Length: 309
Image (tube, rainbow, N blue to C red; front, side):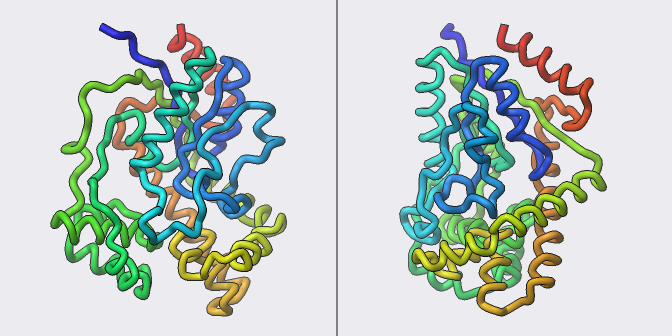
């Protein structure tokens, strides 16, 4: 039997410290990082997504950042989980060929599943006419439509992310419902993953989310959104990117005040983190550690060493 490729996966909710740990592991074990974030694949979405900086990378090569244009959102060229799987597999082959360890790092659960768990996503091509029609609706209206047509998918989706809501409705339109992941998995996978999950108590995580949001606002998140719009990214597409960019688009169009934007974002990001936790907790293969515990940090290093040996 062919030996499977060992890959390390660092996952967890937003703001928990995944990128820092991934860089630490990469420097210690001669690795390179593959980003698994559904918005950091887009160029120009840096401050708003909390994309790792060159300085923070500490010389560690990162893959699958800035590989798509945000202008493709809502079009036939939109970046998908399947596209992520294809590029992720190429990155793993490249990393292994150079004698290094692939470290997948991110909070987008279905991207991680597509790459290492063998989840196959529906082969439903973009329906441009339907997308154009749905783009005129609010996230609340889109969610209500999905809840009526496919309650199971609605129960686990980000109800404030119009891009994902529209894609789910597009699949429902074509197939009648969004297939369950348990029914869409490959059995013969080429990877042997070691899942490292980072966690924090709710109140501490909520505080970290607030601190990081204020820091990003202070370091140019609003000017970044203005530059994206000036470069041709419509407010409609910006809203479809969800979370920070949805609120930024609403603020720049004077639909909400600065104070309302910050309150809205704090609430939306926290609920997003909770949904991430709910998603990951279903996977019993994940080994969970506190992101602030020195003892757990040592345990992560020891467990990773044992896995790679």
